[in-house]
Length: 314
Ligand code: G3P
Ligand code: CA
Image (cartoon, rainbow, N blue to C red; front, side, top):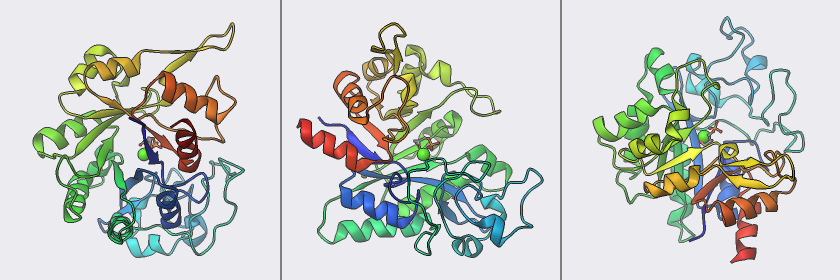
């Protein structure tokens, strides 16, 4: 079976991430799933944004210059939805205001805004109800522990919203993902969520909070995960090593270990304009990942490129 293509933040290689135009474009390209990263506003509305901050992808610093916290960052949680909806969205920038991916869409036009999770689920329902092709959703609950400290149980809000749009059981066209292992277990065992679940696996030095990602990648860790989730979303770079001598690539065995305990593997992030170590061609990366690693799915900013590759080899 061919791997499922997950439009990472929409067709974000072509249009500003997580905007409705980027989602509609990904749908038109034929992506199997549209990804939603989810953060809560001050008035407890869910918006589709990658960060708990607004400053890397919007003009918040210009519109609300006095609303940064002491660390200089502008937090979604400090703004009401109406304020956030008035911001313009642009391509992701770094801490110096420089584009992270310089070759991508240049302007911050009126067309690009932050929207709610509800609005995106309505768009999906509208697109798929007109007799066009189906598409699944792939929501990620962002920083549930941080949200709890901020006074909101974001997980409950997300599950309620997904349920309202019919995403309730295991057969729903949805995967729910989160980096927080405790929260994933809570979602499955305490909250009784029946949706397909994916444990995201990052690096233990990515956040100051204690994590146990190294353990998750072991056979023992994966066996434990398999009691709660349907799949894992590992960092692509952890799936292979590159031999210094001749540049050849070899699986680390993570995909195989996950498959042994029945877990699907959907790594992130396949970017044609930011290739991982050992590759200087996107199709070569796809050939290795799909042909040799035998992935079950992949997160990509370029669903068009991945789908074109899959059509070519089918
Ligand atoms: O959710 C898969 C992938 O998006 C994880 O990384 O940081 O882009 O959300 P991030
Ligand atoms: Ca994500």
